[in-house]
Length: 246
Image (cartoon, rainbow, N blue to C red; front, side, top):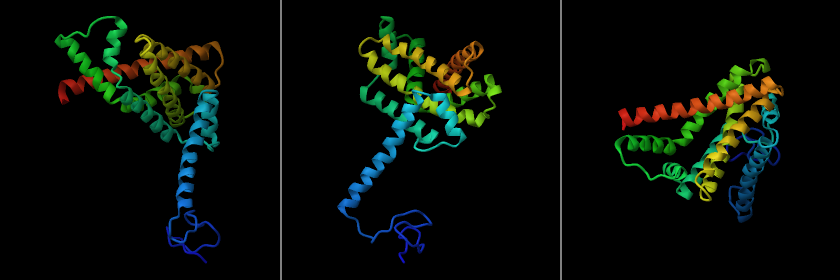
């Protein structure tokens, strides 16, 4: 009987029934190298595509089903969040997008050079440089208002956090697309934020199955308040950092 090279467990068959590793003779072949590459690519790609497709076709119902136990073949919420947040940061780096310069271009004015404006720019760059951390903050703010305003749906706060990770990850796609639109016209960058708020509202209504006028307004309120507090929190943290820690 073969002995697992990974955990030293004696097993019968092609895979170790202790750790799941495939039986191997201890040597690496070109076939195995290619096979591992294909397996890893499809292990990530297929769940990623399935998860994105669900979040843009039935976001709330998908999250509800995931919470209730239907979890294959999808990426886990934190894994999905980290991946898409990373993609957004990569887009910003590769395009060398400057949010502060784009803001002034959208307003049609030159970049001011006074001290107050410089401090505001420093806060803006701090937020931009730490955006992945602020996305993480948005998850918990959004989950709180989802839980608070839709208490009748009986989802716990933790379950709302799962929902928040998925929806916030999907949200990062909007500013990523907005960066490319800003090269057509700087003001287009900000239009997609309205689309993002509409997405948050739709996801909330779908998740809590609250397709009433009241549910619609609760969805708008939760989306707007969550985003407002997220922005204010980011600015306050930036102000504290620039004033006291830099």
